Length: 315
Image 1 (spheres, rainbow, N blue to C red):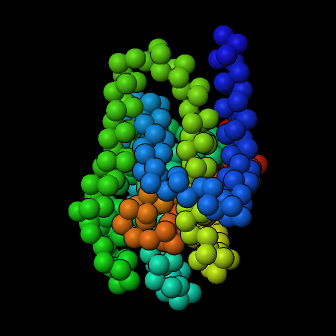
Image 2 (spheres, rainbow, N blue to C red):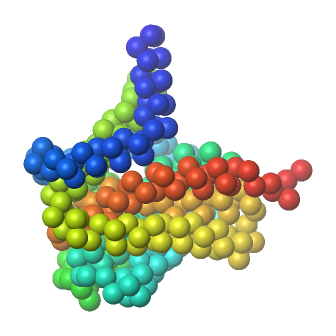
């Protein structure tokens, strides 16, 4: 029992300080790249572990919102797969980004929602059930939608193989999630204890992914790092804003607008890293890696702001 309590406390601590660890180790990897390049071949495996963990936390009821209130879920899915890719493409055009960076920005824009959005929605006093459903649905749709969107928006810069990307997403996202759901269904009682360790594993895996990208992209990052960081901040913050406005346009309540804002603004950037490394170049993975750092800084800030907003419709 003491071990379980310790793991729960450690998981909570790492979850709250996640951004600190990412920034710290990314800086170390930047100054000592040779020590971290060995991680690059394992990026897909590390992401698969994170996705398996996500599967362990999912149940059939997480998809039930699709049937009980399909309008809200569909709005979230459309917002995720329309707003963020279009924003990415527009930023690349307006800022005249180099090809490799442009592809990386579009890549992260075409990814499904990130699981950390569920935590941020909870902290923001948003609609957590809706957030989980949108994340789950966009992740399931990702093998079909993400390659198509990348082809649509990025093929002017590089050659895009939709079929190869489809199989990559199935292998490193869908299969691990399905396995996690199956394990959860078969060994639910054991899984409930194991889930306490998931934040620890996820933090280590994502920090390792970021370190690998920073290490292998060191030279180019020194030249373009500031530009990429500015683009990522704009992309993320505009995603929050447009997600909120979208909810307002469709007449959703405040707690649903908060959910859409966070869900649309936060991406599964680790998937962007894995796809960039597998199909494009290390530099193309940098926007996703920086997104991993930045949205774990911006997310808590936005969640705090939303948490203090009063719903005029609440009784």
